[in-house]
Length: 206
Image 1 (cartoon, rainbow, N blue to C red):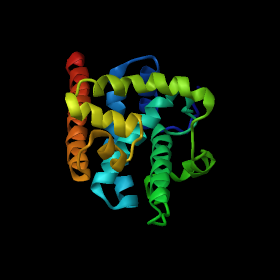
Image 2 (image 1 turned 60 degrees about the vertical axis):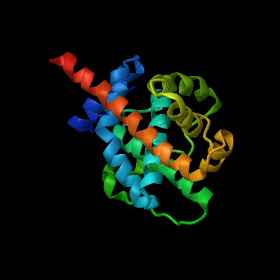
Image 3 (image 1 turned 45 degrees about the horizontal axis):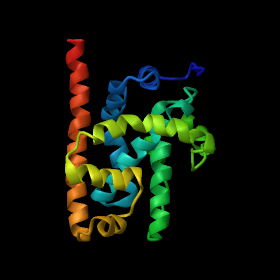
């Protein structure tokens, strides 16, 4: 990865974290998640205007980004790359719903990065990326494995198997409303696990 001179100090620090994550440091993933979960969530919320969907799509965006870190180029800021993944994933979600027409809010992205954004394909996966995607997903799978019972199963079905809410309801033979309520709780529990990973990292520094 060749670094350009136009990266800010924040972007350079992000790049160091990304390199640590690629090297296998699970706490680096947690730090990236902590740094950008709120900004990604609110960007998505502007697009879907639904808090539950925004939380769902936020987790999906991080899973996709973590699965493809080897394909991030430090020519531009990690945040730009992450926001593009999140926006593309959200646009796909909206298109499937066929209920909204979306124009992206460019205010969240550095002006000098816009040309790069337009050059990123909507689907960043290729057949060769699947093995790496699986390796990067190991971090999230390990954290999900810490959940108990149905919460773990709900996260696996939704994020790893990419089931719709309706498909999860059929698979588990429970009402659709129960799926949404329990998945919301499962996401909260997973977020706590990720945050505790970051806290542990901070404690090691002290």
